[in-house]
Image 1 (cartoon, rainbow over the protein chains, first blue to last red):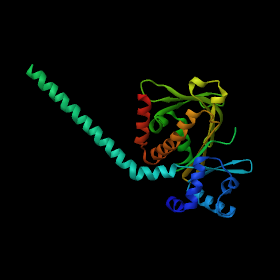
Image 2 (cartoon, one colour; image 1 turned 90 degrees about the horizontal axis):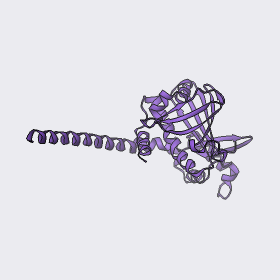
Image 3 (cartoon, rainbow over the protein chains, first blue to last red; image 1 turned 90 degrees about the vertical axis):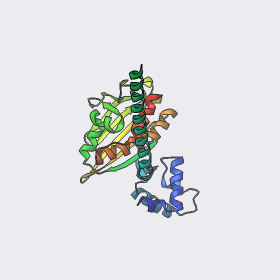
Image 4 (cartoon, rainbow over the protein chains, first blue to last red; image 1 turned 45 degrees about the vertical axis):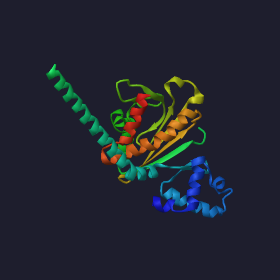
Length: 112
Length: 155
């Protein structure tokens, strides 16, 4: 659903607009775009269904916000895993080096 | 309250009561947020967002404005040094909606006039909410958030 929602230039453009400024109405988002208001409304509904857009009602006004959480989850699924593995291997390395340092110290103590 | 600056939505495969508890129980928030949320959660009471660690710094504080468990919580939000400065006080609304055995959590942050807090908040909420989701669904918070808190503590 997220990929389908992102696989369209017009929808990515709408997300860019919401990234630049949150809390826009349909009218504000449609202004200056070479699309009908109906087309923008349809794109927004798809983005909302994919949870890439959050909405907030202010009276009768529907305000739209970029919701980056599903994108963050995708990043962590493929990027975060490697990052975690790297951190774990670094932690392992640190522990090994510290053990080695203790051994060296102990050997020195034996010598002196 | 003016129109919010940020509105975040996260769907979590956990009952609404568990999601609610994960917002107000300090023993739970420390596991995925790196901070304990402390308060008696009565309207008008103070709440504090206390960093886990030897220092126990209060990074954020505020008042409980509205509370309706397990559905809706509205709190004020400021850095402790800005207490009493209404221009530097923002507001956070948590709305938990049960959807069968799952829940939707919407976090709304309004009145963020101060630039530093605005930047911190825009970077922080997505990470915190993803961490909450993985904690409730898999029993484990995000390592990325732990690292961010470590960086914060090193500053």
